[in-house]
Length: 383
Image (cartoon, rainbow, N blue to C red):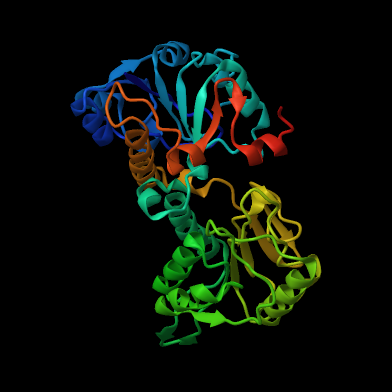
């Protein structure tokens, strides 16, 4: 079986799907590995390192796709700038693609994968169950994102994070508010605390209170009137009345907050608006909001993905793909996640995936010329 590692072509994407050390483990298991020239360069992995690990370096992307039985990627397939051929159309019929597929924003790619007869597996659809934890790339990338979001806030603010006792007087600590206490939120809390900030966190799920407090942050309580979590462990879409109550609780904190890290997202849905344009007026001039949900519509009204905009003296950063800005460690974690899924699908070179298995079935998006994930099929209007 030949495994292909292409160079990512999405703007700003510096990660690579598989790092050299993981290539070495595949070679030892009797898999053949093809790596496109320059695939790992942006993540500080040279072609020579892949060759030393046992991979064959291929100069042409089209050749790589045509030769591989399985392609391991980070970003969803898109039009290749050099060949002017869509990556999904470079894949051979009957081959397999594993990576993030972002079906809600990459509908064209999903349809092309089905038409091409490619079996595809989405990293973001791996079930949140105990035996799949080592494959959970969403959590891995959220760890990186939560960390970098706080650094962005600290770099943008005109105020230092820690309490300082100086000859010129006392400098009070920055007040940081984290919205959402999932993986990204918890990492943001931990990072802000390490920098010396005074941190508060809000999440409607009472179950995360102890995690927040264990990191040294204050947990903002709210009266719970609705079920806020799905069976799969994701945040659930809430009613407008519930969101109004959330905004009241958050608004009461904004006047004294210097930085807000927004991490609240609903899987497959638009992100909830937790900070309205009117609420921005409550914040101090010079404050900053880093919105990690910008691509899903944003937790902050007026956010623009990929841009930093000013509203009423507040800087709103529409953070996009922050994991790619920490490409070395992000690639290392992602590589382990995707290889763990690959080995689950193909425990040996001549194996075939067990589609009755919960992990395999949950992650599979296209197979035998069809979109097999029911939720995606309905959303994309596929037959």
